[in-house]
Image 1 (cartoon, rainbow, N blue to C red):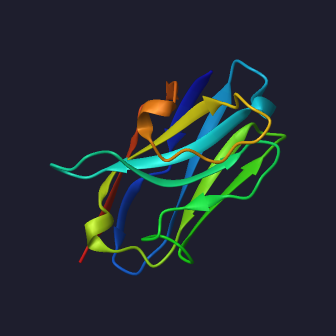
Image 2 (spheres, rainbow, N blue to C red; image 1 turned 90 degrees about the horizontal axis):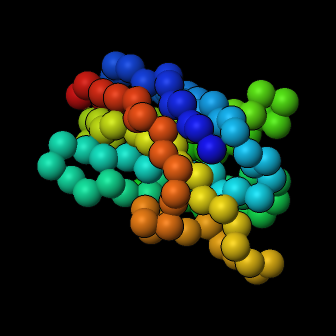
Length: 127
């Protein structure tokens, strides 16, 4: 699976951005797609994830009600709509993919579970 993330940029606090992750290479219906972020001097943390073809999305508590993860099957693209952005959310945002390995599953939040990563896109929120 190849992933390419884009859409980052500079935005004022309280503003919005939409990130995109274009995916290719495998049948994505058996994959979980997720967004992570890594701020300066911080660990990479889970932001949001969803199964490509089924299941409910999962969000980090810090972004619930402000961020939305969606997909466009026709474009093989996953999106992260980010609203009401905060300065502390400035980070490099990465998209990632992990194969679904069992019939019963949930979106993993552990970065080690994800096999495939995009190159990251910088989001800078000015205060």
